[in-house]
Image 1: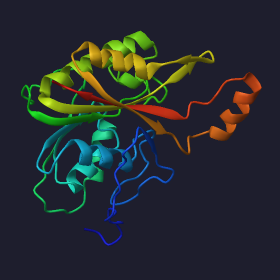
Image 2: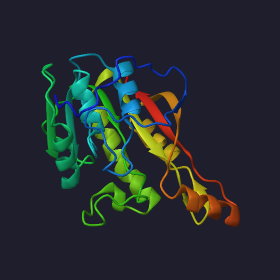
Image 3: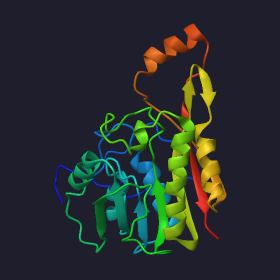
Length: 250
């Protein structure tokens, strides 16, 4: 383990309410913000500690910048993770480049989360967690990958794709276990679009049951100063929260 790397917090207090707020983003080990919009280590650590145990096998089908991979390795969980974007795969490999001998294994592959993964058997996963793009708010592959969820502008088309992700998550998850998804809302022509709830409906449709709806407060959003001025000028409120849905499979 590199001496330059900041070690994980020895005393980590888990959240116990339905409102989570982390003004200061964790920067231990190889965590960084190179991948815009990736979720914070505090969120992932809370989820892994609460909904899994050491030695469990986890799945993150949209690994992005590798936050889940880092935390799974640190917390001794085996992880299956993939992404449709080669850049995300490269960043995750880079993020996992630290020594830690606890036996945890990470399976990383280039794969579309909306498609069935033949390498994963039915009911083989102990916990699924994911942070999808919020439609095309951030274009992660800059339009180069047609199947990339972040290149879909139409809300209904986006939700149709998310339903396929939910169906695959339901297939591989063991009965009685949990699936977590962090999702935000958006605006179109200044009108509020409840994207998170539309996504929630798709997860319920494939068979999941909603266990928790956690409100995650957003901090340090890019261009907040610019949009604060615009919100007053055009009379709309800035969206400063996300929904962290916790689903159960019976």
